[in-house]
Length: 183
Image 1: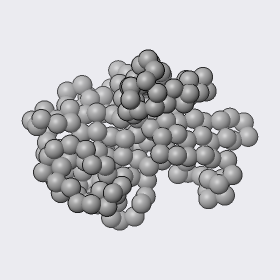
Image 2: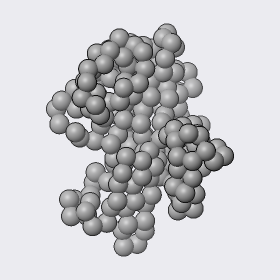
Image 3: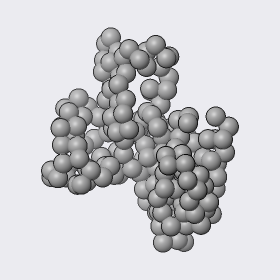
Image 4: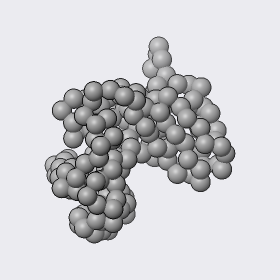
């Protein structure tokens, strides 16, 4: 399956085979990462011995530190369509924030905001997205948290603030599909 995934999501006519359910959909999918990039850099032995990963949480316990990640959603507005392009990205959290989020996961608790850093390198940007600072806004009813980027000169921030065209969104989906087929 690789490090990317396509998830059934919106209502735009871009046909794709969903890597989650295996069916063909005629809508714009969310573009997701199956793991944080730091998990992908581990060898197979370390993945088994020092890492724990699920579809929503990842913990990597090194000798000198423990890294904690949660799966979130980054939404980019599409200006000339009635939909958005969603990225499923992993974000690192502090130990305190991670434990608090994990304890309240899928509960109808109050919504919270945490500081985090993007832990995937989104291929649609020349400059790496790794480590970009974000606010993680939790949502009720088990919906993955939404991230709001902090101000910076990065192109991702510009896209998030100003939006992109449907042509650009479809180009990104096609590029991701090509990457999936080449893995």
